[in-house]
Amino acid sequence: MERKIEIFSIGGISIEYSIIGKGEPIFVLHGGHSNCREEFGYRALVENGFSVITPSRPGYGRTSKEMGKSLSVACEYYSELLCYLNIRKVHLLAISAGGPSGIYFAARYPEKVCSFTLQSAVTKEWLTPKKKEYKAAKLLFHPDTEKYTWKLISVLNNVFPRFIFKLMFSSFSKLKYSEAREKFCKEDIEAIRKMNNRQRSGNGFLIDITNIGEISNIVLQAVSCPTLIMHSKYDGSVSLKHAYFAHENILSSELCLLDTWGHLIWLGNSSNETDKKIITFLEAHNILCSE
Image (cartoon, rainbow, N blue to C red):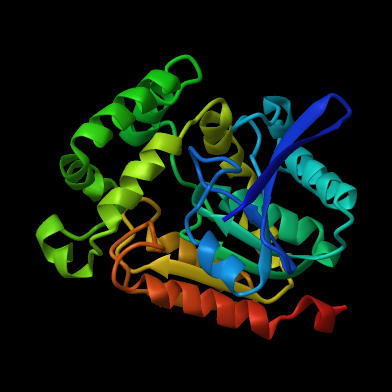
């Protein structure tokens, strides 16, 4: 897939973004430790006639960390980016830790959103200061240390891909490794290796775990566009409670529970189900028909 990466600057803020494909625009708010070079799920979207626009969220890639003062500020800049690209309306797709940004944008700018999809998304309180995972994240993914963390992970993963896949498995799935074997694809190990070679946290992940507190049931209830909530039954990174919470509060939502082996719903023997479901949803909510 040919990817164009550029920088949009306004008011001293820089937004790095990428564009892949041609067709109705899908605006992707990527997950944690990612950036505008994300790949999961993109091929099916492009091959089915959509263009995929992905800004690196605040603190990730070459996007200014100052843009992450709040979800409100970040979403104002996303709106400015769409204006700059001369795009009036998009299909909005928010992934994992990008969930709060997507929810806020859909609620705040309904005129710009034709449809909204949440994939493995955080929709409420997640990592809190009392949790050991929060303390570990602040240490391992602090801006001063994250590049060493990811360098170590990528080096080990390149040398021992199967071992690292097995080691990381429990962070993605509630299934035991032995229980999930039949759900794996042979390509999954290589997909994880590539992911770990492109992951970086920058200032972004600490911004993510700070700004999550801005999302509430009131914000979710303000989302009025057709919404698809996609979540693995076995997600070990973001609890199913997040999917249920979003479904309970977004009146226009449809809940889709997937049989994929964990958080990365684009991998495994059931990944085709993920692709088919989102393509069907997007085609049912054509932007031209909504205007």
